Length: 312
Image 1: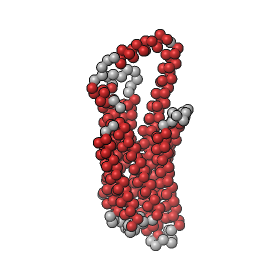
Image 2 (image 1 turned 180 degrees about the vertical axis):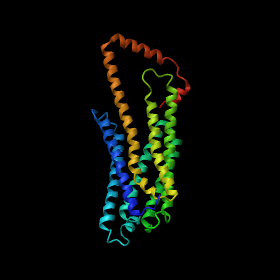
Image 3 (image 1 turned 90 degrees about the vertical axis):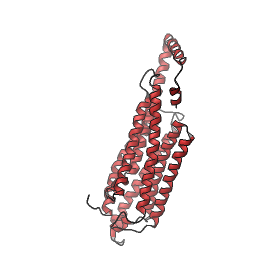
Image 4 (image 1 turned 180 degrees about the horizontal axis):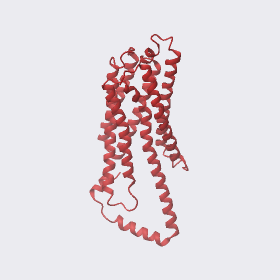
């Protein structure tokens, strides 16, 4: 594609980020509505609500910083900053740019941390947790290195990829892509094993883990694909990298809101099923006795070793 000056790249990337933020905002509102509607304080999944709010807050801060940067670059410092808007946007040592990449690093670390924690909950393996934690620490180190290098990097309006800062950013993107993809694949593999092991012993509606497995794969694929696109563009020194990089923050939020929304819907459907089952058994004593006898006969059957190993 044709060479983009830094000011045009900032403008187009912020517009694209705003579009993605709109979808993220919609997903956030729907997620909170599902998680909080008609729920008592004890029924609310507080960790998911807190994480969803943090992801939304960080996305909002990131977009607000980019909008403020457009205002400063195009209107405030256009005629007063040496080199004009292009030089101002090309300076990575500006405080707002440092805050911006810090917010992106926090969003990435939070998202990767959530995936790692969920992976540990499913596997219950200290070795997997230790391995993924090492990957997460490497992500944090490369993020800190990128922030520190940016604070001391000189401005170069003619080459967006000059100096050692792009090397740090490339390493950071590779590390977070590796961490997220590894954790997502481990989580999806475990869910697949559980679904496969329990499908022959399940009576009633389809296993909800099947739909959750598909959603985990879809959300992980969305995030990993976006990161891979940024990485390819950045390694090839294409200006399109900046168009996608700003949108990564709301894309992270969208990926996790997809999963949170599914968890909330499944919890609500499970609660409704329990209430309906209680009403039916209370209104029909003979049906209740039949259900009890059937349940006892099923529970007396020995389960295979694969089923026991696959349990959560």
